Length: 392
Ligand code: TGC
Ligand code: FAD
Image (cartoon, rainbow, N blue to C red; front, top):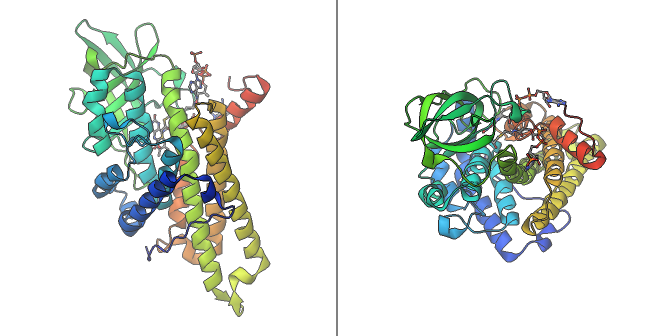
C-alpha cells in the first residue's frame, strides 16, 4: 500500500467530548497503526496470513483487555477508550480488530466475569500480554443465528468432563492457545469451558479461501472426546445469556471499529477526489462526487455520536443490549455503504491493493454478518420497541 496519509475527520469537533486520557490512548493507537499495521497489512491480506508480528504491539497499546482491571494485566481503561482503540485498529484492518475484539471481549471478558479467581489469575495476564491468544466458540455448522440450538455437549465423568461437538467460523482458532467454548451439559444448560491447545481430541483446522477478513485466521474447533478438567468450567454464569453477554461487549467495540474503516475510506476518497483530474478539473469539483463525500461525512458524524453516547451509557452501566444492537447494525451498515461509494470515487484504482478501500469493503462483509447479522440486530430492535418476538 502507498504511504499512510490518514487524517481523521472530526466534523462536529467531537474531540471536545473526550477526556485527555481518551485522546492519549486513541493517538497512541493511531500512531501504532500507521507505523506497524499500514505498511504490512495489504501483503498479509493478499497472502491470507495473520501478521503474527503485530501481537506484541497490540498488547502494548492496550488492545488486549482495555477495560480489564490492571491487577489482571488489563489496561484498566473505560469503555470510551476501549471503543477508540477498536476504531483505530479497524481503521487499519477489520481482521486485526477482530483479533483484538475476540481476545478482549470474547475470551478475557468471560474469564473475568464468569470465571473464578484461580482462572482469572491463570489466564488473564497471559492473554493481556499476548503470550496466550484466545478464541471463542459459539457458532456451529447448523447453528449460527440461533445458538440456543447448539449440539456441542459435555458429560460429567467424575474427575473430568468429556466434550464432543464442533464449532465453525472461529476467529483466531488456528493459532489460539485457549478457547472459550460454549456447550450443553446433560440437562441441556449452556456453560462456558476453557479448552487448551494440546488437549487430546481437540483440533482447529483452518478455513481457507475467504474473500473477506483475509488477514484474520478463521477455523473450526473439533472436539472428539476431549477430557476437560473440571477446574476449566466457568462457574459464575450459565445459560445462553452468558455468551450473549460477551457479545454485547464485542458488538459495542464493533460499533466503534466500523467508524474506523469508514473514516479510512472517506479520507482516502476525499484526497483522491481533490487530486484526480478528469475533464480538466479535480473530480471532487463535480456535484456527483461531492454528493458522495458530503453524505459520507454526514453518516460518519452521526455514527460517531451514536458510539460516543453508547460509550457514556456503558460507562454508567446503563447501556441495554438492544441499544448496542442498534449501534452495531447502524455503524457497520454505514461503513460498508461508505466503502462501496468510496471505491467508486477511485474508479479503477479503487479495486487495487494500492488503496485500502476494497480490502475494507470485503472485510465489512464479514463484520455485517458476525456478532449477529444485520437482520438479527434489526429483529432485536423490533422486539425491543414492540415487545413482539419476530425471530421464531
Ligand atoms: P433469548 O430467549 O432471547 O435469550 C436467552 C437468554 O439470554 C438473554 N439475552 C442476553 N443476555 C445478554 N446479552 C444479550 N445481548 C442478550 N440477549 C438475550 C435473555 O435475557 C435470556 O436470558 P434468560 O436468563 O431468560 O435465559 O434467546 P434466543 O434463543 O431467542 O436468541 C435471541 C437472539 C437471536 C437475539 C440471539 O440468539 C442472538 O443474538 N443471535 C445471534 C448470534 C450471534 O451473534 N453469534 C455471534 C457468534 S460470535 C462471533 O460472531 C464472533 S466474531 C468475532 C470477531 O472476529 O470479531
Ligand atoms: P445463518 O444464521 O444461517 O443466517 C443466514 C441468513 O438468514 C442471514 O442473512 C440471517 O440474517 C438470516 N436469518 C437467520 N435467522 C433469521 C430470522 N429468525 N429471521 C430472519 N432472518 C434470519 N462465531 C463464533 O462463535 N466465534 C467467532 O470467532 C466467529 N468469527 C467469525 C468470523 C468470520 C469471518 C465469520 C464470517 C463468522 C464468524 N462467526 C464466529 C460466526 C458468525 O457469528 C455467524 O456467521 C453469524 O452469527 C451468522 O450465522 P450463519 O453464518 O450460520 O448464518
